[in-house]
Image (tube, rainbow, N blue to C red):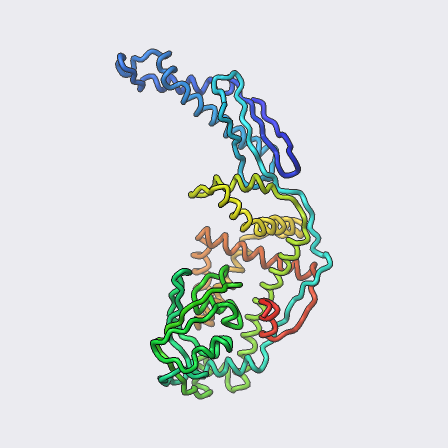
Length: 440
């Protein structure tokens, strides 16, 4: 067998394979011999069919099967031996006039290669690392929400500015149908004004664009996915099912102990300090996520390389349970190209920075994530045995391992980006951070 690479350009090649009779004749003969006791031809008893008739009836199909096995194995070994870094998998070139009776059988496979490129993590940029602070307005608002949450609900006949509403958000086209409780003050002013004076049973239609100060709140109240929240611009109906005011709970030691555990908060000042600490820890995570996204966008924009686009579009038509048309593959490629580019950039950044992910890294990250999740549900002091039991169960799930590994990689890359991209630091309130994030 002869096998070689034919370069088309830096990211596209063709693998050409020439198969001769010696490459497959032994296996074909073996299959014919195995077939003879089972062959049935009219006029002959089973197992008594002459070999030449067996070859005539079954030989062509057997030859094609065995040749394909030889080609598949040789292709796999060739890709490994040449250490080809492929995008997608090899695609066989179609040949409608292929002659299976020829002395030499030639097969061609298109391949797309990972491009060679360099990235400059220290390139000059205008990236900002935000330090988000919890101001008095935010803290006072959270204190009031706590008092309302633990206070006494008072039914109201109509909606007022300080009312809490229970009702259902719906949009049939987008599959939204979620019942929730929400304060009127949570909406933006234009939306909130639509509710004032409404009664139980009324339906209020609002736009999702800018409905909340933080688009992520759409995930909580409408139950839409994270990938759908940014820029979501549809109309949803809210059917009012209950309207309540609130008799605010007294800020006393009993309430503090219920919220944070016995003796951990002893005054309004302690409460505000705790709210500030918790809020700013959460804001820091959001700021890190924005920083990572901004660095990703910068690197994608400023790291230039070609992709085997036409090859990948053809390849997309062949993968997955549902085969795509050329038009569908075009759309899918456009949707996924940015992600593919950053995946390649991310791999290069990891290699350049010598980043490696160990099982201990994954275990430590998972342990911390589990503790944070347990704390959200009031389990502030779980035993190490409890936590490690949950960690072991989580890490036994391959899908979870993949998802968590991606988060560990993102965390390590973020530290590299913070160091090498050297972003400017800016302290802002949460409202200013939201405006910087979503242009509002």
